[in-house]
Every structure is written in C-alpha cells, then in structure tokens.
Amino acid sequence: MRTPEEAKGHWNTQGGSAIIAPGGVYLQEPVFDTETILVAPVNLADIAVHKWFFDGAGHYSRPDVFQLRWNRDPKPAVAQGAFLSDES
Amino acid sequence: MTQEPSIVAAVQWSPEVLNPTAGAEKAAAAVREAGAKGAGLVVFPECWLQGYPYWSGLAPSSPEYQHFRQLSFEASIPIDSTVLEPVYVAAREQGCTVVLGLQERVGGTLFCTLLFIGPDGKKMGSQRKLVPTQAERLVWGRGDGSDIDVYPTPLGRLGGLSCFEHQMAPARLALCSLNIQLHAAAWPGHAFLNPIIDASMRQLAHENA
Image 1 (tube, rainbow over the protein chains, first blue to last red):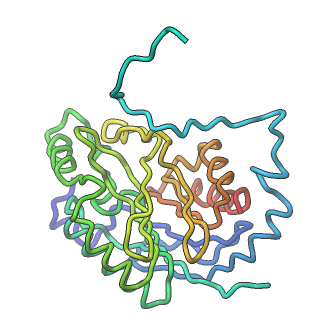
Image 2: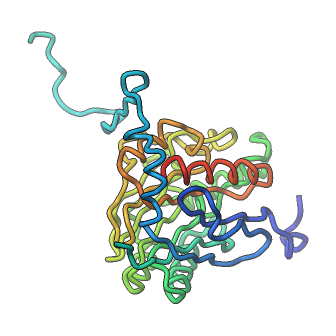
C-alpha cells in the first residue's frame, strides 16, 4: 500500500462520469483521469419517440405473462403495537 | 410543443475521504460551480460525501481494514444531520435539484444512501441501496425498498439507483412504473466496471427512456 506521500498524484480510480440521452447516445462521453463537472442540455421532448417504440411499464409489458410485485411497505425490524389477533 | 432544454450536471470531483463536514462544503462548492454553468440538476457519484469505501477490499482481518472500518462508522451520518446544511443552502441558492450519494448511519447499521434535495433546499427523499455488492456486504445494510421513489422537479420526474441496483431488472421496472424521466445513476469508479456501466447505462436510457 502506498503511503499518503507516495499516493500524491496517483488516481485511486479513474472516474468515468457521463451523461446519456434517451435512446442511449452519449451527450457527454465518459471522462477519466480528471476532475470535472460535466454538463449537458436535456430536452424531455426527446423521450417521446423512444416510448413510442418501448414502454416497459406500459404498452411493452405483458402482465398476463410477467408481473412485478413490489412490496413498498416499510419493514421495521421491530414493529410496535399489539399482537395481531387470531380471531377474525 | 418542444420544451426549453434544461441543463444537467454530473460531478466528478475527488471526495473528502472520511470527512463529511468537509465533504458537505465541497458538495456545496460543486453545486455552485454547476449552477454557474446553468445546471438545474446536479448528480454526485455513489457514496461521494465520505468517499466510496474502497478500504473494504482489504483483508477484514488486517489492522488497516479495522482502522478504516472504525473511521468509516464514525464518518457516517444520520440522514437529517446538520452536517448536510451547506448542501441544502447551496441547492436553494442556485435553485438546483441535487442527488448526493452518502453513507448513512441508522443506529448501528450503515447504508449506502442516495439523498434527493429539491431546488427549495429541502430534502425530497432518500433511498438506501437494496443490496450491497461483494465486499460492501461487510459495510452496508440493505434498504427495504419502501423508499424508492420518483420526484417531480422543475426539470422533470427524477429518480435514481446505485451501482448494481441497475442490474436488478425489478428495480429498473419499478422506476419505469413511476414514470421516471431523469435518472441519476450513482456508481463508484472501478476499472472493471467501465464496459458494464457503458452497456447498462445506455441500455437503461432506452429501456426507461
């Protein structure tokens, strides 16, 4: 392992930040070995054409075949309150 | 009718390792610099506030690992910590929505958490990473999935995921079902991830458009 002095000037990891448009085209290609703030303009109107082709939670879903169940309940390790009754 | 384009920003700055107070000041500076470039949304990498715990790749039995583990625990913060105040102030000042990766402490458990801050400088929500990867499993607990959400912002409907949550198809579909328009993808830097991130983030941009 390098000492802090030896580590000066070395990147621990290289980065790779990027900005991507709907459809998968890079607006900012991945950037490595530099500190920077990438910016890019985004236009929500660009989304529509891609949804026309594919909407995974809409017209391109087949809930009769595959359906996702998402348990959004909070799940505390300790639940306070009375025990649930066996009697209905 | 076409909308006026908005500007989004991705911050690639070195973190203030294991120093959340300095990290929050640095995050605020990044928000100001991004705001000066016209950005309305500013996204930070995974666990950026204290730095991603690369030390978790050391041998757990080693003194170095145990030293970093202790520092990492002490550098973790509750989500409502006042340490974060400079980031909220900067967000409000710049009118920026911010997504910040940080290490959250809840009692005796640490989480890899994404914090969503609105342009009014208030927390919109936060979500804890569902499943830590490999060596992260000795550092972080698991989010319970109740906090995954998509938030209305001036730029559009915003959500996000961390790292290999992007490889969890149900997580991607959950965000799709909430009509996400802007996706903050928080990753650490790791050379082996580069082709995975390239492929899966460009896929996501089509899959969840």
